[in-house]
Length: 493
Image (cartoon, rainbow, N blue to C red; front, side):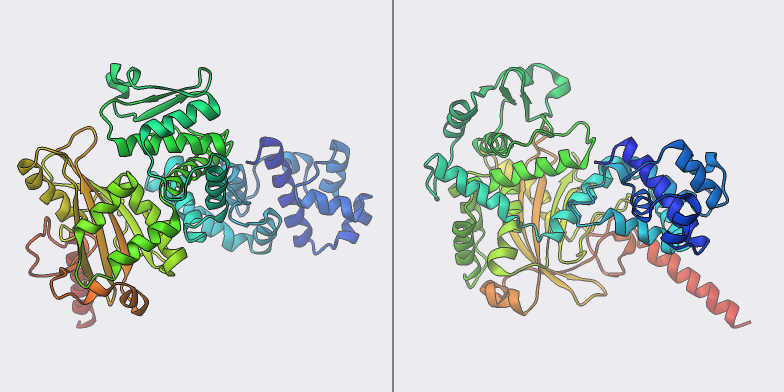
């Protein structure tokens, strides 16, 4: 994370480099005019040094600007957007090192083509403002990009889980329970569990867990399933074992003040999933499911019982396992939730590996395609719920063919009742691009009974004329067609 002092050095360095290049001065020529060494000037431009006032005065005189311009955090109209970016909270917080971005190379790019870069940066700032993109959304997108950059497989986290299991003599195929994990937390870190406190306050009933480091107590909400408890306990083990100090203490993060907090939260969650589901073992189990000649939903549901995990934990773990063990990199993961009367749905999470797949998160308040298996399973869940006394979980599969596209996805979905309101319902979907590699792995793709549906992203952008599940008319397509009609009429004059 960049502090204020570093930002001020960067702004001065950027100005010096830009002015020097405008004057066509070499380092040696500027050194001759200021009496400063070339190495010292190079360090200034890289943001490594901030000279004393007397030296800044010499630089200002040599570059034909005044002292105040050099030390101010503003600049000319052409340079201001870059200065704004360097001064912005986003830039300060952005994990350049994690993304392999050299700060020196970035500043060099800014000074080489400042006008073009400025136009781009100004556009991005306007888009962020117009669409109300806040810090939380920015960090979430940065995390998704970070995961995609690594194919969502992190050997260092997998290795940490292996070390943990060896250190505490845990077998590779150990079946975890809340009691076992609770004992581990107490034995290893002296952390106690409290199941009563969170349920006493209505304002925090949506918080599943909260860790208080001062008292070394992990508070867990009442009414959670064994699988949900296991994940929360294993996640806390991840925070502790990986020594992740900059972290959230609550499960629903109230404030994301840095990318590091979000990244460490992911690392602890990845640790938890890998601890409960050994990658090689899960790959073997999934291979058996894929080799079936017909879709076997019960085999998919049996994985939840075998590993004692939630639907979301299983699906998220598969996004780690499938690229690594099967070479399936073209995939997406989404979590959908429905409102109480199931008239609208929202995408709460999405992750895309290799490319931006369909479906994707649409932030324009449009209506997601109700032909998605992610949505149909939530609707079906209500009928299953009425006929069963226990909490229902639905598994379904579908080949989704995207309208006006040659892309098809095998979509595997698990749907469960909502945590706070069971009538809402939610689903998690793993989408795999149908290609020769996928066909060689999944034998049941050729099953004639496997559902195949033509879908799109939102109703507003969909031109399927006979859609029985349409919620609203294709407004975007109609507006585009009207525009073409107007242009055609004008050309005919």
